Length: 144
Image (cartoon, rainbow, N blue to C red; front, side):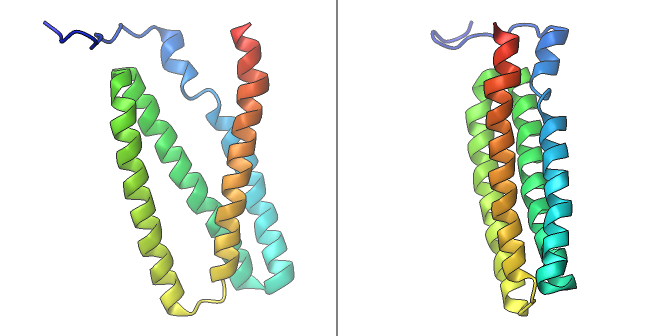
């Protein structure tokens, strides 16, 4: 017997399983394009280290957000009550790992550090912007 207020997860349908990741290809394509542009701008402005740093920065953001999307989609498919604890756990783990990586990179004196940071920031802006666009246009049309 379940506690009051705790709902049993419903059996997922085929449509339920697909909607959680339907936006992911669009986000990956947009940030893939951003990574190419970031590498090109980095190369033109600061050479090979800047190109690598900018592209890696975008890649770090994409990897982080993709892992979050996949884990939270899985958690939601198992039981929606798992989304909050998994989301908070991922948040803490990712920011701890990012901090360790950034301190490690900063201690090397690598010339691509600033472009790496800019690539991370650009990745966040583009991923978030495309996600907002997806939710307000494509996903909103599906709900009507």
